[in-house]
Image (cartoon, rainbow, N blue to C red; front, top):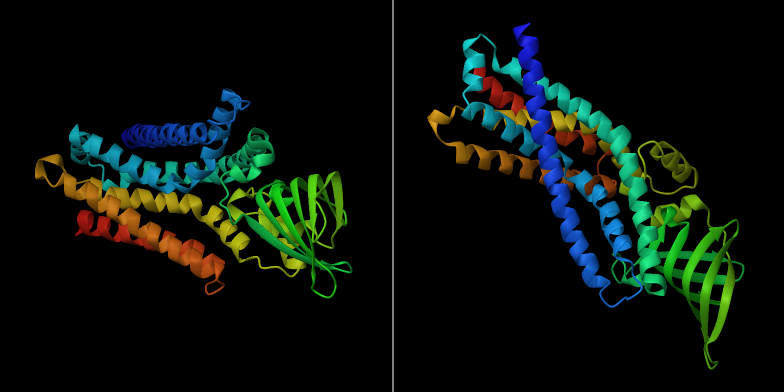
Length: 363
């Protein structure tokens, strides 16, 4: 009964500290992003203030999802340092409760939080990211290129019986099905440049692109404006998705379908497979972060060295982040299996924390 009561007590403190860190970073990111959006829309008189704020609010969850392991790391360190400062860990040890027993509630809580983050939070953040792109296109209108995507934008090349067309879009929505801020360079079947097309939006339909608010430029001819323009294409949604979407903006529940469709079209699937395995491994990554935090946070305050412990925990989290980025790049370059790239940081972080705790607690 004592262990169960303490377990619930420690779990409550861990979840509270983690949620507080998560909420604090969320508010900070929203404020920073909102200030940037206000700066970029300062010369647009028709931009509603509420829409600008909602755009920032909807874009932040995807950014915060990448920082979730560090929220758990900082939350766990804060939780255990607070319990140690108030001598509650000393009382627990005096009652015969081992360190492994009061770490277990945080591990279980981290696994549950990770499962919820994968199954619930990820689909919501992906949906909100797509919604923010729609809001951004509504704010900037025909200046879609003023969005978050840089000047290079997105590029895709298509060829058919009419020749070749190189499409550049400033931003994309619905995983590349709808594009904004377009420039199209068309070449005939002999490879000779024929015209350049500027359009506000484009929508991929069956066998064609439908452009809106079009201006066509031909050599030795004045520009021609059209309300709509149809460009035949043989591209499928899977092919367009591979060029215009990023795996981070695809919901966890849609990833298997994306992987299957891209593989069926003969396209690279390393990025989607990596993202899928990373989401599956997320609960265990958060548990590994708890082990790392516990390995540097269980020292008693009267022994001193708290600052060094905190810096050690932050350094361990940073090194694990670097390892994760390296394995991600190797996997996307098809130099490493996606499943190995996703799980290697989990094993390294979890094993390092476990070995340090084993040495500290059991000699």
